[in-house]
Length: 153
Ligand code: ATP
Ligand code: ATP
Image (cartoon, rainbow, N blue to C red):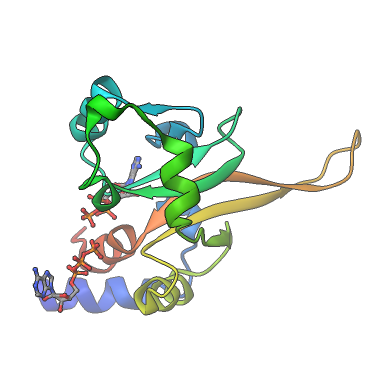
């Protein structure tokens, strides 16, 4: 029954990691820091329907901010406001986590919510050619973790 699924889903949280449930970075709807909030961009935002939109500079792996769609309520598309103006004004915090974070820990962190309900998932890239660096490989939201708790298999 439902209760059994929820309890076993909750018990699984300790041994599953964010990597298993994240939305992969290539599937994330993002905007470029250089974008302009004109009619076409605003329409695209509406069409995609997400409440939180990561903002990248030059390359998608370089996250510089996060746009909350609610921050757009005062925007007039005819003003062609640069996205960077809005990003620099609101400065919404970005929250990062490692790919191997267990879901119970992730659940607690996202639920506290002082950093928002979305985390960027990162891993260390360590090859011969250069010094190790962090790469963002996906995003995870509270919704993803809750989905994992209530799923019936
Ligand atoms: P809300 O329900 O608060 O309006 P939302 O629908 O934008 O938010 P969530 O409910 O947090 O997003 O997540 C739903 C799914 O969409 C999750 O799998 C999450 O990883 C994914 N998701 C969230 N934001 C984006 C985005 N910008 N691009 C692609 N996928 C996203
Ligand atoms: P999000 O986190 O996706 O931006 P939100 O902060 O608007 O959404 P929720 O996180 O869904 O809202 O809910 C937080 C709390 O605020 C809940 O207790 C909810 O009942 C309450 N709440 C949501 N919308 C309103 C509203 N318009 N007026 C009063 N309380 C609200």
